[in-house]
Image 1 (tube, rainbow, N blue to C red):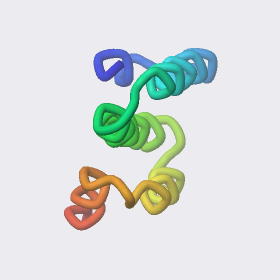
Image 2: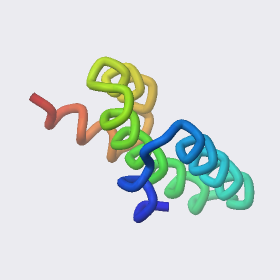
Image 3: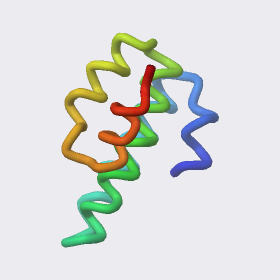
Image 4: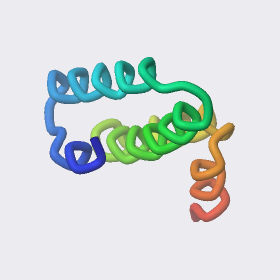
Length: 78
């Protein structure tokens, strides 16, 4: 999933990628699900920033602060 994220350049590709992320999350339980959700949020942030701009990325960032990696990005941003 991480290697596909930088290659997404259309709404259809983005939707298919998001559906795959969602399906993978359903199949996991416990720690694995939480770890995957955090990694997925980091990938989603990159896609949102690239395709939707910084305002949308900022909004997503605020909604995903429950993930440690996202919090680290949030505190390190300028």
